[in-house]
Image 1 (cartoon, one colour):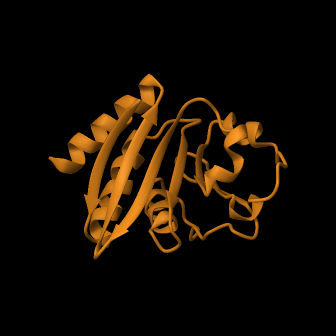
Image 2 (image 1 turned 120 degrees about the vertical axis):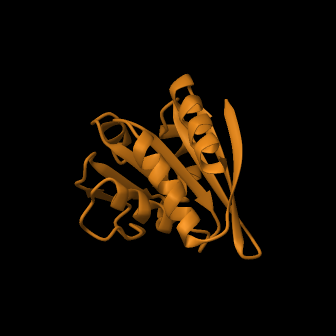
Image 3 (image 1 turned 30 degrees about the horizontal axis):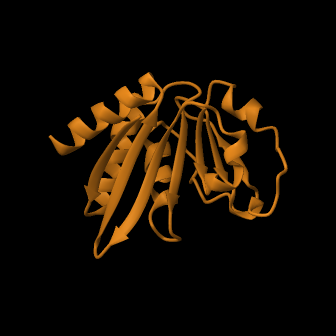
Length: 154
């Protein structure tokens, strides 16, 4: 497991971080986003979608749970907040294995359905900045985290 910490001080920094992810994503990559309400999870998703050529505005899929977008790589954006007291499997395996990038907010509510390999972005608000802890599981994701960290802090 590879863990790195990045400080994001502005929207430009967040867009740059999402852009770096956009250069490294690959089919079936699962990104798990955590952080308080307003931490920047959806903002990160919007910037990443833009980098990947998504034309539609990415919004938080709280009421839909899952929204899909077309881009250079298809994107499934999930918000599992409403599944807090549910153990319902909404066919997650199909989404994890259809060649898309999967972005999941509030993933803690579906942990039993997650694949073995993923990247976690934990966003903590601190004054006017965000401290983002990146964690990759699986050798490919560890390498992605290391490369993004090195390029962002360069």
